[in-house]
Image 1 (cartoon, rainbow, N blue to C red):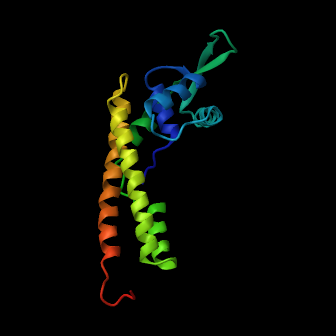
Image 2 (tube, rainbow, N blue to C red):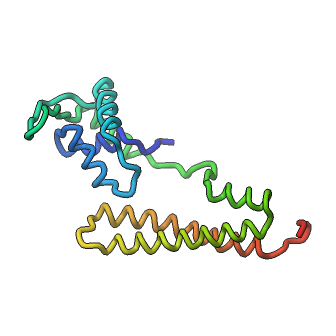
Image 3 (cartoon, rainbow, N blue to C red):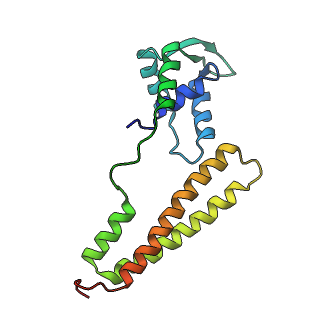
Length: 181
């Protein structure tokens, strides 16, 4: 399984031409607006590792009214590595790892169906609120195609969670034979 990672995103951003770390950080944040933000320290540490591994090289220095900024360019090895990553199909996750699932199961075990139903109802409201927020964000003036596809991705996952929440509420609310009531 190949994981999405900041190094590959930085390689992808460098595929368009040389850039310095400050520009890469801001391009990352603009390109993946709903992803966890990338810190400047992480950008420079990642560039150092990519350079060490021969995937990027220093291509010059820029000064834009501030300190010197080293620009980095993608090497041929970097282009090959990026192409391989882009060609690799992401396998579906083999395990379910979700705080949402864990909380529902623990609520059922520790507090019983009433507490689990209260949690499920509160979580459903939070999901619906987030769904509305993302739907509004897609229609904001200046929303880029990256903003819209990131929102669509998040909305699809929220929709799946909402479907699961509805089914789980029904299952928890309906007593099952053989289970203590």
